[in-house]
Amino acid sequence: MPLTEGDVLDTLSDSVALGIEFYVDKIHIKGEYLTTVRDHIRAGNILVKGGTQDLAFYDLVTDVLLTQKKSPPANDSDRALLLHECVHAMIDVYDPDGAVTRHMGELAAYLTQTTYSVRKNPSSNRNGTAPWDKFWGDLYATVRANKLDTSAGNGVRIPSATLENLRRQLAALPFVNYGDFTKEATGVSDGLTRRNLFLSSDEPVSMRSSSVSHETYVDPSDDYLVRTLMEAYASADVKGYGSRLRRLRRDFLYCSLSRAHELRKRFSVRKRGDRLSELFHDRLSHGGRAILLRVLALRS
Image 1 (cartoon, rainbow, N blue to C red):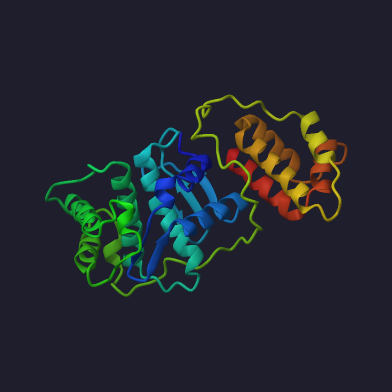
Image 2 (cartoon, helix red, strand yellow; image 1 turned 90 degrees about the horizontal axis):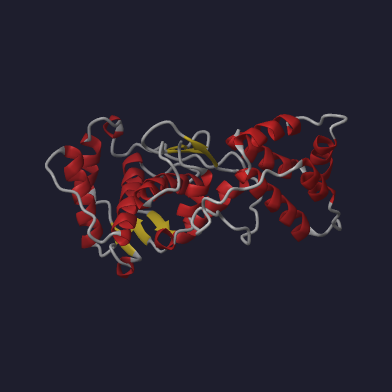
C-alpha cells in the first residue's frame, strides 16, 4: 500500500519542515511556500496519488505527486523523500516561466531533504566512495557547513559556484537521467493547470499525526449526506458553504474504498431518481463538485 494524501499533508504541516529557510542559488526554500503547496493540494490543484515505485515523483506536466510504495503512516525518512518532491511542486508553483535549471532544482530538493533529515536526527550521515554515497555525504557536509542542521542557518544563501562540485556529481550519478541535461537546461516547471480556490485554513489537515491516526472512520450514509447537502445558507454566507465543503471533503477522504467507488459512480453525472445524486449536483457549485469528485477519484 502506498503513502496517502494525508501523509503528504502531514509532511507539509510538520513544524521541522516548515521551519526550514535557505537559498539554493536563486531558489528560495521557505516554509511559507511549502504551505502554499499544501493549500494547492487541499484545493485539488495538485493531485496526490499512490505510486507503485520505491521513490516518490512529482510530474510537472500533470501536476500529480505520486507517493512512494510504503505503508502509512509515513516515518521521518518517508517524509524527507516526500518533502523532496514537494520542493519540485513548489518550484512549479513559484516559477511558472520555467527559469530554474534542472540541476539547481534537483540540488534544492536534495538539500531540503537532507536538511530535514539532519534536523530530525542530528547524527544523520552517509559514508562511502561509490557515486551515490559520495554525493549524499557531500550533501550532509554542505548542510552542516552552512549551519542548516539547526535554525541558526535559516536565511543562508548558497551560491551556484559553491554548489558546482555537487552539481557535477549530480550529473554523473548512475541510474538517473540528470546527466542527460546540460548545466543550463531548464524545463522543470510550467505552472499549475488547475486553479481552484483554496479551502480556508481552519480545516484539520489530517488525523495521521494524532494519537487516533488508526481510528476507524464510519462511512457517510446516504441519510447523513442528504441532510448535509440540504443545509441552507444565505447567498452571501461564504463561510457556511465552505464549512460544508470541508466536511464533505474530509468524509470522502476517510471513507472506505468501496464507498468512495460507489459515490464516485453516483456523482459522476446527475442521475434522476437518485435523490443524493440530484442534491450533489443541485446544491454544490461546479468548483465544489470538482474538488469532491477529485477526492473520490483518488480514493477509488
